[in-house]
Length: 242
Image (cartoon, rainbow, N blue to C red):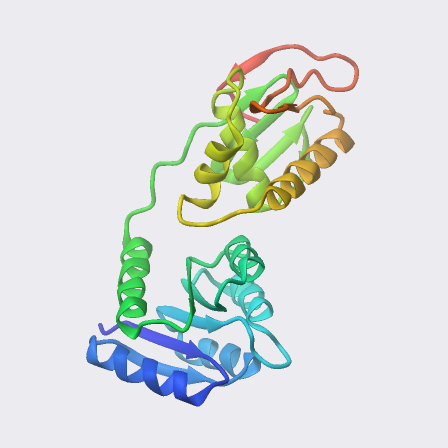
């Protein structure tokens, strides 16, 4: 079947331009000029991918993406203002699959659409094993983190960050390598963004009874702490069921 692409932008010229480019590339095309219309069109037609402008009036693209993610996992490519790192980072954190800055080449955007659809159609990778460090346990397959058996609610980025550290708990991971592993090599993520995720992760684990979970070696990188927990539990390593 012909993949259907929903283009959401308040600029009719951009919608027309993308409609022509997508039709020439063999894609079906639907359009919406604002967030409410985008959600209605997505529910009515079930597109295979959404091209979504962040700078929409009233309900902006980030709110539309949040609403879409509550309902399904349709791939999303954000259109962002040139040089706006905040929009790009926030968009990717919300679960967008890619972003393109304005002004853009229709040919490049069509190529990105093909690449995202190809990734979305690929078979799901085998679930990674459960990880354990002291009183801290993480099961990536079930998106579950627990401290001494009690669940801890983390965001997707916080869980990715924790999993990357727990894969090799006794190794120090340089900050640039940690950024590349989580956000990819083509995204410029500021130190402030990484610091915010680390701070939130530490605070949540500390509140759950594991204040020694993440250690920063200044000028070197980040590594897992012993995760003894409040009361001094012991043990570390990988494997086991949280």
